[in-house]
Image 1 (cartoon, helix red, strand yellow):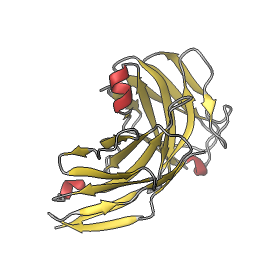
Image 2 (image 1 turned 180 degrees about the vertical axis):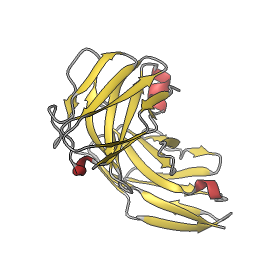
Image 3 (image 1 turned 60 degrees about the vertical axis):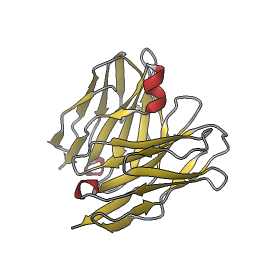
Image 4 (image 1 turned 120 degrees about the vertical axis):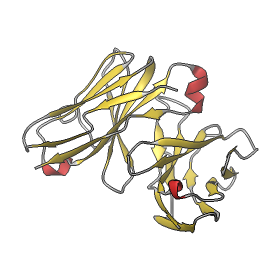
Length: 115
Length: 118
């Protein structure tokens, strides 16, 4: 069974600085998708970025980028030029490539942005 | 991407009663997923609902406690039955798009229901 681990329960970053959130996973599958979701206090889950495992190129979305290391089963999220609105819980998620294509979520990292 | 309307957004219920949570999607979807989230914690999958068949429950969750309906491709309900204070949590639904392009992009989520059982 697949597992997702986020080892940082909480992180802080100064506004305009860069922060990296860690995520590791375990799987025997060769093809899968990885996601980072953001959950602000409103509870809404917002997709931040996704990565296809068969693509070696790291995904980027504006200020958000990932460092995907398939062999190491690592999928970290880098947030550049941090803004106050980035403060939220961040969840790393693995999506299975068979069955119901369900998500498996990590335990989350709470990001605080300091003015 | 699909937009999900989840109701109610919050409720306070007496122990021993039941609450039904609804999720309405603005487009047809295949699977719908129901999650429980304790405050400050991760999302735990309760069950997966496919239209026209019984929901598939994860370990630790049973149909008698969390009956699910999926009458069509845009709607699903989750009932929390015979509630106790331990059921106090946030419940979220999520939908898997039928459109293959959207499917590979990611799923959307409802805004959650905060349930308090007293």
